[in-house]
Amino acid sequence: MSQRASTAVHGTWNPRFTPVVDEFRQNFARRGEIGACLTVYHDGTPVVDVWAGHADPGRTRPWERDTPVCVFSATKGVTALCAHLLADRGELDFDAPVARYWPEFAAAGKEWISVRSVLAHQAGLAATPRPVTLEDVCDWERMTTMLAAMHPWWEPGTLSCYHANTFGWLVGEVIRRISGLPVSEFVQRELAGPLGLDFFIGLPPAERTRAAELDEEHPAVADMQRTENIPDVVAAMLAGPWGLPYASRPAWQAAEIPAVNGHGTARSLARVYAVLACDGEVDGIRILSGRPAVDRCREGQGRMHDLFINMAAPDFPMEWGLGYTLNIGGHYGPNRRAFGFTGYGGSFGFADPEARLSMAYATNLLRWPADSLQGDPRTRTLVDTTYGCLSSLSKTLPG
Image 1 (cartoon, one colour):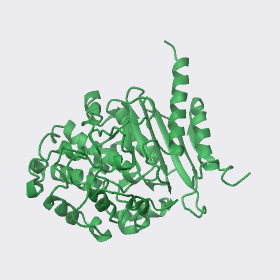
Image 2: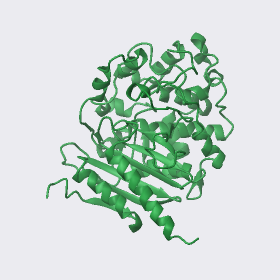
Image 3: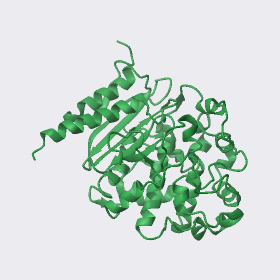
Image 4: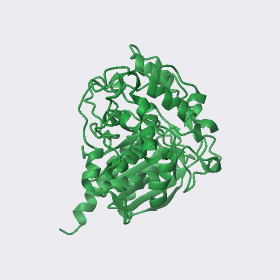
C-alpha cells in the first residue's frame, strides 16, 4: 500500500456521515492531495471535522488540528460578511455611493458608483491602472489611494469582471471608514472573537510556524496570461504578485489583502457559513438579525457577461450575489440558492440555509483549474457525498 493510500484521517464525525470521510480519504489515495481539512455543519452542529496529510510539500510535517492555510478567494466570503453585518446594523447602505463613506473615491467620475456594484463585481475597478508590486499590495494606503484616484475600466453596471484582488481593498476601505477598524481587526472583534474562529486576514508572525506551506501543480497565472484574446483588464489583473511564489513570502502573508490572504482552518470557515445557514445565529451567538439579512447575501445582481469568468466559459450564465458566488453551476450541491466562495487552488466554504448546512475545505495543494465552474474533483465529490448523507438522514427522521 502506498504512503498516500494509507494516509490517516484524524478528527471526529457523526457515523451517518462516514461516506464523506471515506471520500476525504480518497483525496489522498487517488487525487494527489498533500494536506487538507474538512468541516461540515448541519443544523448548527459539526457533523464532520477532519484533517489529514502533511502541512508541507516535502511531507515531513503532519497536518494538525489547528493548521491554518491560505484559502485565497474564500477570504472574500468573510470580508463580505463584515459588510453585511454593518448593513444589518443600519450603518451601511448598499445602494449608497461608495463616496458617501469614502469621499476620495469620488474622483475620476466615480461619485455615483454604489457599494452594491462593488460587491457585485460591476464597478469597473477589477484591476489597478498600472501593474502592482509586492511592496504595493502590502501597503494599504497606497492601494486604496490608487483605487480612489483611478478611472473605471468600463461603464459601471453594464458588465461585470471578477474583482479578484481589488475587491478586498474596495470593500475593506468602506468597512474601515465606517467602523474605524482595519478589516483584519474588524474580523477579530466581530467574528473571530465571538465565534471562536482560528482565522486571520493577514497572518500574524506568531502564527506562521504552524501554518501550512503551499504547493502548486503548475503556474495557473502563466496559463491564463497565454490565453488568446485576453481582455485588457484581465491581463492587468494578472500582472501582479498573485499566487505562488508570492503567497509563501512573509510580507505577503502578513499584509492586509482582504480578497485573497485569509488564513485559517476549514473548521473556522464552516462555522462562519453555519451562521449564514442558520438564519444568522450559531450556538446562541447572533451575528445577523435573521433570514432576511442572510437572503440579502444571495440576492442576485443580474445576469451579465463577466470578462473574467466568461473568458473560460463563454456560455456560462454568470450572476453574482452581494459579495458571494451564487450556485448557478451546482458546485455547492443541488440547492441553487446555496452560496459561498471558492478560492484559487481548491479551498471553499458555502451555506445552504434551506438544508441548514454549511461546509468548508482547505488545502495546501493549489490545483488549476480547481476553482472552475464545474468544481475540483477533490471537493465536488465531498459536496455530492455530503448531500447524499443528508438525504439518507432525512429519510430516517420522524415525520
